[in-house]
Image (cartoon, rainbow over all chains, first blue to last red; front, side):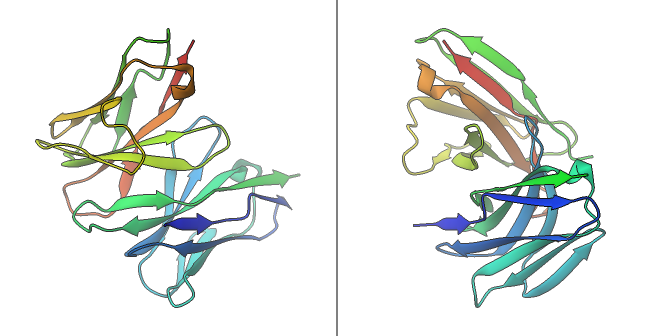
Length: 112
Length: 116
């Protein structure tokens, strides 16, 4: 089977740093993406890791360790608008279609 | 750029009727589109991969006769929920992968279906 596990909920205060973990078990792996989704809205792309290591995009960074089947999203200088659900997603075979398998999702609540 | 639209944004229908949802890539061509279903406070579940000019590929457990997918052009895919029942009520989201070669998928705003 295929599974991507994330913590269900994380809370933090404005200005803080939070890390959202993702462990995956999939039949085939091309890369790990992260998406943000506000209630009732569409997922929006945040970050992507194909190789091991850290990718930094502004306040957001994402890390991947393929040997550990593990990744995380790091959000720095949290703002109230960061309150949303965050999903990791694995690019899965076949490569010709690049389908995404989504994780269980983490609801982030940022408090003032 | 890379905008995907869905229509309608919400729909209410009676049990037993069929509902068609459209997904369009507005400023790019997409040979491949995807359909997801999302229940409240849950993850996105991939239903099927839609390929222009060929039959859709359905994920395990998704009834292909109930969820009809047609990808008639490089910018339009449709999902028809046939003989809808209350348990089909959900948020349906499409995404499109640009033919320009990027791995990234661009998501539509979703369609909220309520079956009464």
